[in-house]
Image: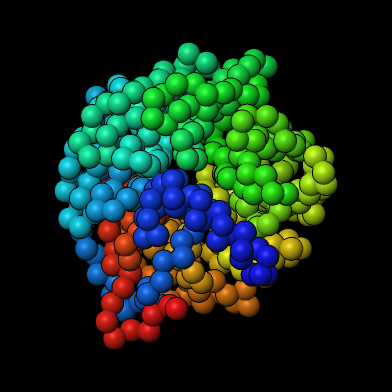
Length: 412
């Protein structure tokens, strides 16, 4: 990573950690920077033959909500036959600390009902959104309801359920909620009070989530939408937009510091596109650096490590050169999976519950170990890394896997 990019990432990380949690936390969807990675060190670079120890495993209700971590607590969502709920778990044992129902269970069109959105934790609050677009702010300590919003006030629930994970940036909570060709499409609420601070754009609500970027010296929120990529300022004004072919916007945009944005879709007509955004004076310019169909992310985003993209091209794990889009290696056998990173280590989860540790090496696929971690109950949720542990869930259970150990080489 170039020095300028490194400085930018450290600045962004410091700002996000100050507002959301500590260095060993995973406080929002896709981690402290919403990039699917952490700088957590001291992790095993090679797994024992039987795999790292399972610290605990516990049943969980249905849904695709990810696991966030702050201090000694974990937070996620689940569905039972009657309701959806937000849960706080003890990170050491997996035991339930509190559980708060947030609305009725509604079966999804594909028979996989339950929460799709991942909570965010900041300033002693847990912000969560149900599949039916009820947003709540709960006390992280005891689950007390602090404020709530019915996002259907601004637009209908998307076809497959509300899926966007709220972005917490300082005192703002940013979500999508809207109707086609109507305003607003993006809402920013005061994290402390729930008061609407500003609104922007037109609907409709999609299935993806925004990422924070700092481009041209301006902090901004980048959204990948049905037919465009668009960035908003912290005050809700449009900074730039780039039209793209209509597609199912599900994966998050991936920031490749300091000024590139990767967007993707599983559709053959779209594939993956890398944009560069530049600013001169008060004018932004976007350009397409490359576009091809070698990284068609379906429901989980790629991760960028040291200038290379690692992610799933539908059912194939790939590594691409982020500068050119060239394919460097491919690996099949995981199904449609997900990948997150800690330093130069990748943690891959296949949709059937197979977990693997892979080195982020653009020269070749190098696996440090694998094991069947869950029973295979639709492991579509992206894992989390916090406190030296890999946190994995499927439709039936959550597993906490120890990533540190004695007598084995560890990452720097």
